[in-house]
Image 1: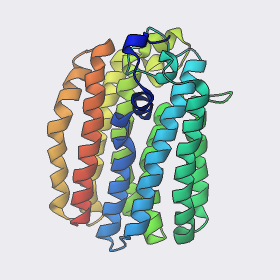
Image 2 (image 1 turned 180 degrees about the horizontal axis):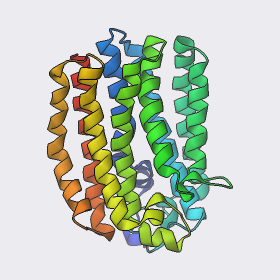
Image 3 (image 1 turned 120 degrees about the vertical axis):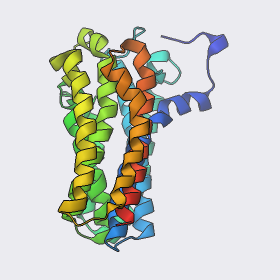
Image 4 (image 1 turned 45 degrees about the vertical axis):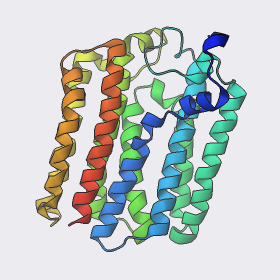
Length: 301
């Protein structure tokens, strides 16, 4: 669908839409938490931490471009779309332009990886390449992950376990048990963002034959899944205090409950369709605040 000429955004605005700025906290928060663990272990290193942040941000942007163009190609993005605008579907950017943007974003992420290779060695290359492949095959390729109910698992693994543990590894040259445990809450909160997205799109995804976990288990169970992820995030975060010898400073993470209340109320309360876009943004905000406070609590330990 093309946008009327009178309302058509310019190229800069179109690229801003394609980047999807509200999704970037998904990349930022896990890096902060991995760095918080590194600070607690006195392994903090500014250069690798910044490179990890740059790599994570551009991997997220590349994934956004990939989802934009591949969802359009598969017919998942139509005029009936309930979510934020997608530039390929709206005709604001061509498929070729979005593909080039995707390649450029991944190239920047790889440049950050080159630096991290020098710092942390070859394991980081495997992690980086696996992350790029996962970003592409999430909605692209012959068997897209996001169309076969594996989106929640891959989001949890790559934006939780891999992002937190990887950030710690590039600074400490090893992976600690605390880093692995700290990755679980971040995997939970970032997956909550996807859960809201998929809950909103259950009906249109079913029509497009996009089989998400929400399509399989239904709306009621998806709402419960959202609440369970939130509960696990807080429980595991606080278990680090007695299990890993961290300090009571972790209790600062409770401040994120204030930001959880609005989206939790909307999701559990039965809000549906386009109205869930506000809950989606609020969940991304909660994820970022949770990550900030959790990282602070870890660093103070």
